Length: 313
Image 1 (tube, rainbow, N blue to C red):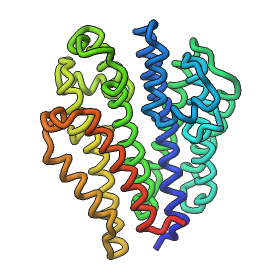
Image 2 (image 1 turned 90 degrees about the vertical axis):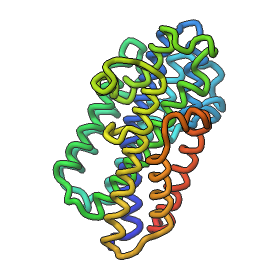
Image 3 (image 1 turned 180 degrees about the vertical axis):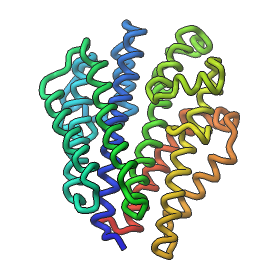
C-alpha cells in the first residue's frame, strides 16, 4: 500500500499543476472580457479574483483592479498561494518528494516547466505579452500531463494523481462558469444580446471548448446549451460530470487495490449520481450561481474527505 505521505505528494503535485494551468485560463478569460468592456474592466478583474477565491487576499495589499496589478498577482505573486508561480513551486516541491514514484520523463517535464516559467515570470508581464505568456503556461503544463500519461504505470500512483487533477479541474470549471453569472453580466437586459453571446464564447474559449462546442451544437450559442456542455456533457474533458466520472473511476481502482471503501467513495458516487440524474432545466431552476456555489463547496469537502480517508500526513 502506498504511504499516505506519498499519496499526498502525488495528489497535490497534480492539483497544483492543474491549478497553474487553470489560473492561466482564468486570467485569459478576464483579459478577453476586459477588452470587450473597457469601461467595466475593473469590475471584471474583481470578478476573476472572486472566482479564483483570492479577492480578500488581493485587497490586503491592493486597492485597484487594473490589468497589470491583477495579472501580476495571479501569475507571479508568491504571497498568493494560487498564483501560477506559487503553484509551480509547490508542484515541483511535491514532485521532488515523490520523485522515486515518477518516471524520469515526468520528473524532467516538471523541472523544465518550473525553470521555463521562472525565467518567463521573473519580471512583470506587459499587457501586450500576456497572450503569449498564458499560452506558454498552458503548453508547459500540457507537456507534463503528456509525459505523465505516456509513461506512468496505471497503478495507485496514477490513481492518486488523477484524483488530484480531476478535483482541481472540476473546481476550476465551476469557478469559470460562475464568473459569467455571479458578477459579470451587467443586467438581465443584456441576456441574449451580442455582448452576452460574446461573453459565453469567451467562457468556452477559456476551457478550450469553443471548437468542440461548435461541433456539438453547430455554433448555436444558447446559454442552456453552453451550461449543459460544461456541466453535464459526459465527453467534454473539462465538464463537471466528466471530472466526477474520472474521480469515481480512480477511487474505484483504489477500492479494488486496497479491498476497502471509505466515506469518500460514497460522497463521490452520490455527487456523480446527482449529476447524472440532473437536467440543465433543473440547474437553471435551482439557479446557476447557487448550483455552482454548492458544487464548489461539495468538491472541497470531497477533497478533505479523501485526505482523511487515505491518511495524507
